[in-house]
Length: 110
Length: 117
Image 1 (cartoon, each protein chain N blue to C red):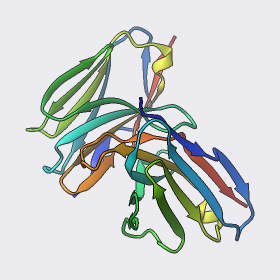
Image 2 (image 1 turned 60 degrees about the vertical axis):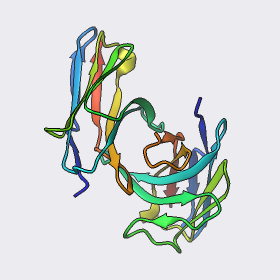
Image 3 (image 1 turned 90 degrees about the horizontal axis):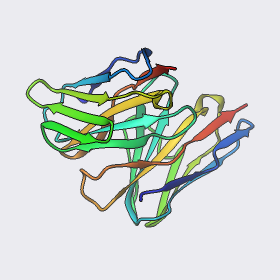
């Protein structure tokens, strides 16, 4: 089974709030995980890449992986209107490439 | 950096036409390139994986003769939609990864919106 589940939203929060985006997956073979941001009519842009359980921080973004519960999260601190986009999570491992979630549409209200 | 350029960004053409889409890695050598379709509110659907100098590997349900992929160099892959029909209208996105390791991140182009009339 290769599914990655992600709530499509839309998720609407006020500017400055902390945003939590989440995905669950079912494939135990997944070894690495990525978060992409996709603006309308554009290709996905790599935000975060993690290879193990735990947290990884990059500026206002923190990616969290819990392999025991097959749960991955992306936190955005001090959210800005420019963060409004669709966020795609993806998992990969073994002989397969990436499996993407459907994406969560995030709206940051000024 | 890891810049991937995809061209054209938008194509509108008549049914029966063949359309070629180019995907270039501008600042790195891409041993592996991927082609996806994306439908509104749906996840990226992998169509095929192409490795430089060898035949592409197609996902189940994707017609090889319909979607021709050529990966002639380490910086260029092309997708040709042959005899396109309205049901082929979609957003096609390519991605490229550095090296051959399966865990390399993929870097995406900006996609091609194909509309078949």
